[in-house]
Image (tube, rainbow, N blue to C red; front, side, top):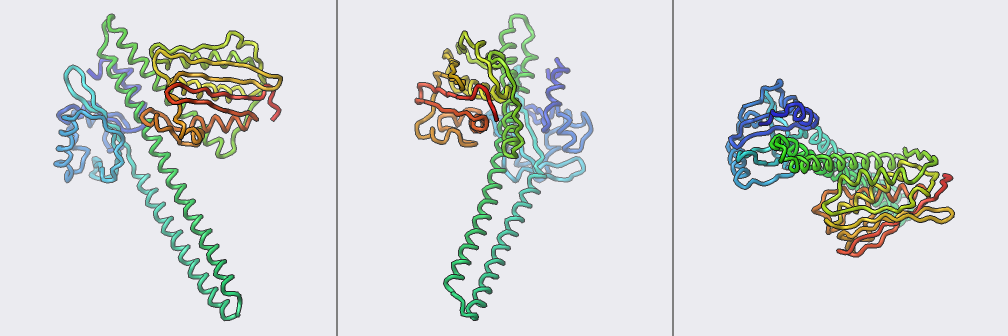
Length: 414
């Protein structure tokens, strides 16, 4: 069944950079992409119809067989497993650390499992390097403390102010500890970022792959509605991944001060129509977007791409955090020097205690923790708006909706 639409399946299956295999309930490998074949040192097609144990060290076979049986019985979805003890074995018997995400599905009463496999050898090496750097930094702190103690003893013999030198030593130690803390915070931030990327990419990719496979099942004319549902899922998740990539690119540019704003004259209706058109593919059942009739009246001299990014982020958030059969409203007004855009939704709102953190990078309110998201979009939007000489504000009541208002200069003279 996996090869009824070989071209579409192969394109999507081989496009995934991570290793992917599909196994049946008997632990037989049905199909494997080139990434996993290269990862384990096999030629194209060599893994097909092989038992899954071929990729697992022999000493782990018994335990893995038990875990596999339990997983099939429970029929659970497993996120990326960060267990540092997961080991794969190559064809040449070399062992290496891996992370694995599992996603079961059923077709024609047969159970299958999609496994996404990541070689984390480089990450393990980097973690080891970080640990060595931390040890080296601690050693330097110890050495510095020893040097300070020697200096104090010398100053004693020179009848210098002992208490003053002690204070200098405390300041030096505090600075070194502060540097160490900053380094550790940076390492934690990098780890959190890698975990975020792994989760936010793997989940939609798995959904895309599953929907693509299931499309083969619905080939009759009367099954068009089911096909459309899976096509909509694929489209939605592709948009989601594209937005994540744009957010990550924006962060890198903002952090490195590489943002080069390009100002030009344009009609606001061009951006509004394009953003709303793309947003319509993400609407839930019964949701609809309203825009002003006079949108063509507004002419700006601004960075067109950044204005589009701002509107896209706020509109997509309104769709994501609003229920079915709800209205999302875009309003536009202007003064002599400023344009004001407001996105008004009837969504879940932002808890009062979380509102002061909503523009912090990676922060997510407590009522959306189970919804996909990175927590970086609003931070990026706020930074761009401030760089363009504008401002962003919001009003929100939990369970009643939110209104985000952006004010931008009509003619930017930066």
